[in-house]
Length: 416
Image (tube, rainbow, N blue to C red; front, side):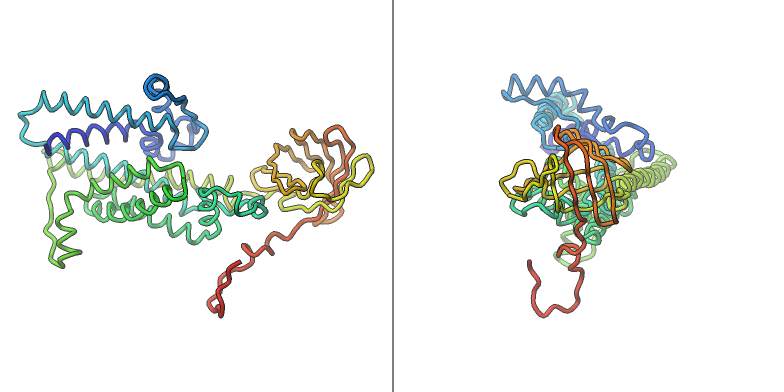
């Protein structure tokens, strides 16, 4: 039974690690930044026709892989799990018939543990650096500061909560990075698995309770951590529960020659450094592109519309008006949002230069005039009508979320 369990574990985890998006990609290190983002999904794209067929004919669902959605819990990926699970069961059955006389799989177990260490370590570094260099959860966008709390999804609440405290995000990332680095050296692998287990259990719980679509991957990373800790479970119980000395374990070597084993240790350490550099590079690029380190556009801010005229006639600021703007928000990365009079926040596609704002929907071509730093006048054509908009910049840093800061002394809790 133990041998059958090993055969299934080896087959399933190998298939998962070699075909799940991004697990192998991180080992490209710095070279990964030279490839398009779609390269991360090449294995799943290759399997996409099979998943579509299974979804349509077995489960009766439309299981089309969306390579740009960013979700790791798509219907196609659940069917992918079913696919590799079935393959693993079939391989295990055939393997058990053909290789039933083998006494053990000691050396192959060592290789399996190495595979899981590298896979887990790579993901810990990938996600850890995304928090250590805050790019996974950036500061709340300006438009989010105007959004009613009840309109946020649970996942957005989690993202904004972490992004509101960069220090907290950095500390979370530090734990994940430390766990990942420890996994790349044999002597510290158990400690790395322990740190990774604690970190990933928290991540998995958050993904489950805030409906973050990374449940599949985070569950597998928790499982990998547990598998890595299995050989040390007795020692961990002796040490942490009974307070007795732990006995060192000597797992079977990867190779029969000591020279090759020493080289293997060095290669693992070098690979960890290589992956860490690549993960840090990706995170730094994200931090500068769309994180707190991104350059702010000239019009950056929340602009409150004071005067809105169409054909020279003022439009009163009534909440029932469907055309008048209440605010316009210019954020980093070219993000532009218009808030209508009913409070609805409408993202728009805009091209902005020093002189004009071109908006696709609603169709607008507006000239920019800046009488002073905190006044914006937009004049031109909006939905076929001559329009003039006068807006003043809000001090968004005066909002409580940004201005409250840290206080050692609080005579009363400050909840707003």
